[in-house]
Length: 164
Image (tube, rainbow, N blue to C red; front, side):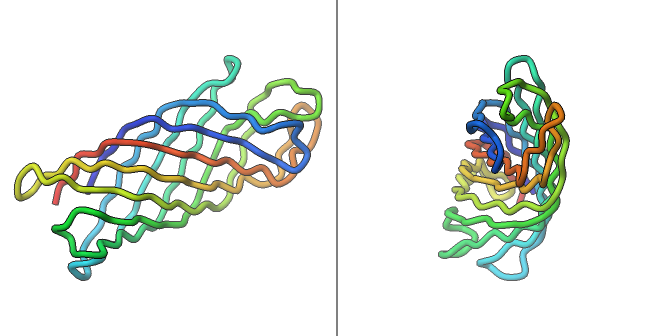
């Protein structure tokens, strides 16, 4: 299991948006799982990204099934994490009027990250992670205008404490 906190950047796009919005914020990730082999971990991951754009609070949350793959075994440290699951977000895409308003959407998402475990002792490690998540939030109504196919991209860099 691990718990991570770090910097995250949100980019929101949609088919009818006037431009891409991009803001920084805080990303928190918690995951728990088990080891079916010395190369693979299976688990569940929860992630929350929080930020604010022009005083409009935004948040993207996810609950994913994840797989960690350690190409040289669990004790080497380098891993690739991939997952998919449910996403929920309150985002402020730029509509055609360029006004800011928060709207809520939910859907499916995928995530991919790269990490490295630095062992502190037999049961604890410090883990460095960098990852991206794509959250398909669907068609949203922003100030009366439709934001078709709204996608939220969350990029994060974080440090985790890992319990083995």
